[in-house]
Image (cartoon, rainbow, N blue to C red):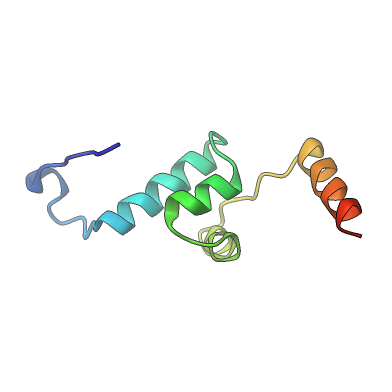
Length: 79
């Protein structure tokens, strides 16, 4: 997907393509529309970097029971 924005629209926003991707990823994650892994990938970051950014911006991490169960299953399988 490619999005084109006019210079007039983004004037004064200090918005680079990388910053736009990061901001999009943060917004979609905050709205619980994408997973942590997908948000990190969209932002061009590894998960630990994205988690650190979430903390800096005080955006809560979404983690529910199915995710916990999936993580526990992965741990069991790696033993």
